[in-house]
Length: 158
Image 1 (tube, rainbow, N blue to C red):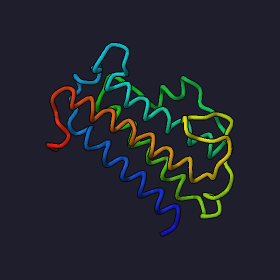
Image 2: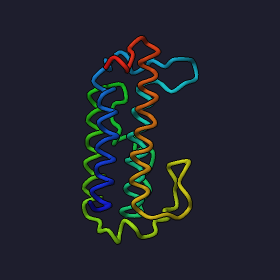
Image 3: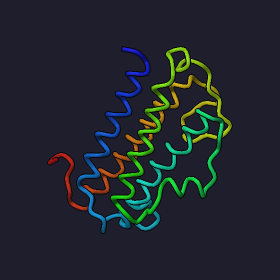
Image 4: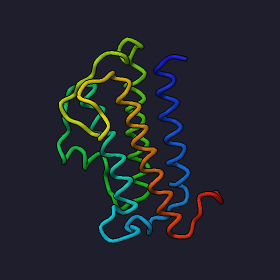
């Protein structure tokens, strides 16, 4: 397998886990959080969309999106269907960009000037940024599973 295929598989697996949560959500749940001060369910989904949608243009074009451009990509953060659509559109763009990259590209140094992840060093191979997109999504999918569990929906029963 190529690095591109491995990365695409990791992104697909992360999305499978997130989709397992999405199918258990109802629109009225978007504003709920386990405790005051915690990000809501809708806020978790927006976070996933924002990070991926902001990072890919930086890597691909060296372009930093404005807050307004990012908000346009997210769309209506109070609509579960809208957030699902945004997740799909953003992932399609990520995979389309990934498909244009060679193995050498994925191993080349990518040092964008803006950072979207606590674990990313200042310089690393381009492929690592895609892996971090998947890692970020896994992290928030896990949080959302815990949120659902706190509401009585035990993920071990899924």
